[in-house]
Length: 339
Image 1 (cartoon, rainbow, N blue to C red):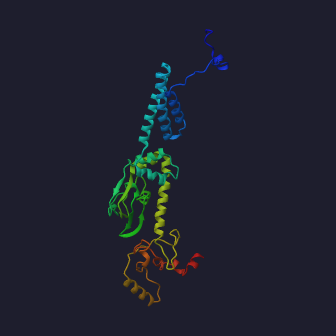
Image 2 (tube, one colour; image 1 turned 180 degrees about the vertical axis):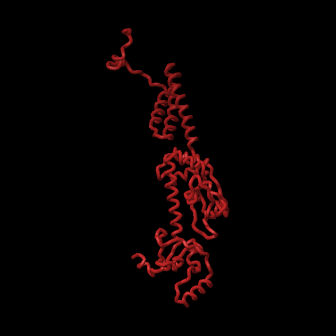
Image 3 (cartoon, helix red, strand yellow; image 1 turned 120 degrees about the vertical axis):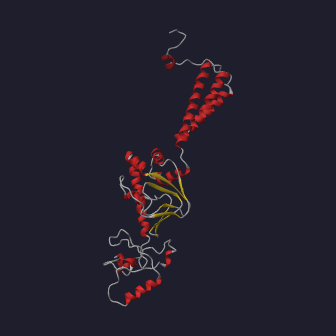
């Protein structure tokens, strides 16, 4: 090594002192580049933070390249900064591609915020779920049937995104299905993967509705492949079915206005056709004229307040259970029942 060029040790431990500072400042391109690079390094994390950083670094290094070409007249300065500009542009193109690939329609974004974000489900997992339904939103017109009792096969699982669907059986109203509730969760849980079946209820749209649907076979394959998604669907379906059961519980009333719980052991469904008030009066007269126990079945009429509660004449009342031994009709007041 020649004596004119200092060694690395000397350059690091004993750097040469500047004989004199330059009398003139660098050009405007150099200072502009420094300001832009400074702002670029103030960006945050994540994909949008990376877009901000590389979006400012690219013009900053470009200004450095102009300064090296026009003012400093250094080929090395020009080449290195040109390479840095090219690297930033390629990184921006990659980030834009990722952003475009990861973007989902507005309906699926709202669905993620409503159902999956509270459970802290990663976006990668959610994209697998959306991919299974092919990112398609189905529509259902007003008064159009999603399923017909005894005819429509159970070959899919659907989730309502907007609108309201009415569930009925034998023409009797059961409950409503609202947005972000499954349309056919009881039917899905009632069958094994190898079994076939048909709907036992009729689902009719009361308003214009939109929903997403997963084909049965494809969803079973996804659930078998990913246990986390399987547990996620299991929790959502269980919660949805419990909500439907509680909506049926709202139809149970006592004479003194107390709501009974469908989970009580001596209470079960007794659905019968509604009868006219004349038939009810005749049944009451025949019951009063005899001392024998009440008949096995007794017609009932709709409650006057049913319209206010959004129910019809098929709403259950406690009178349906009066003929059962040990029924809740033995309690004549709310206080006795609570004891």
